[in-house]
Image 1 (cartoon, chains in turn red, cyan):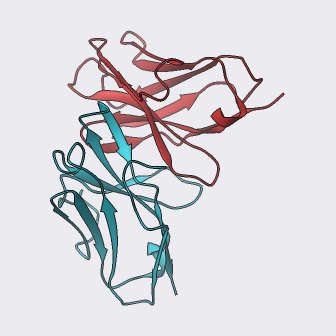
Image 2 (tube, chains in turn purple, orange):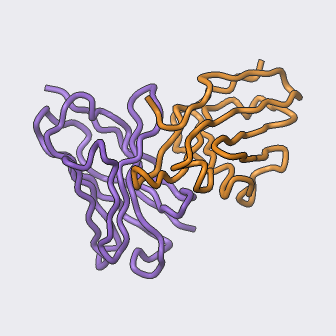
Length: 117
Length: 110
């Protein structure tokens, strides 16, 4: 069974950079043709797709976030990462990592990130 | 403002059939497959329907999906209290080159 687990700081200040890592077990990031990605959900609101990466390095990003977001992959550690810079309070959200086909079958449990001074 | 449009709420008594609509455009639903997710508050979303109409193993057949042109629908028959959750549609958008979600529909079992 594929499992994903997010890790990273829960509290950051405005203008700082968010760094999250998603560790994958039960599957090899480089052994399959899936994409691996990030989705976030602001408190009480809907889902927002952030972007995805293939182990080859190919990426797709949400145009509204593209200027501030970088997704990278480390196949040796079987994990992938998200960086969001120039944080504001509107980046406060639950961040989920996921395995991405056309649909998303496997999700991490999510990690809450709060941006506050 | 979400790219895909869903009603904010839906409801029905136990045993009834409820449908949730999802409206998009040619660049997303009109061209690509639709998937649906169920999210119980405090948990990660769960895949309910993929490729417009297919159910992952474990999803009961009282849950079904359909698609026509630039719209899709999720139907839940024989409503049960455990169906109370938020429901999201999603599809790849060829113009944005990314995945887009609906704003979500909160389903209440009366």
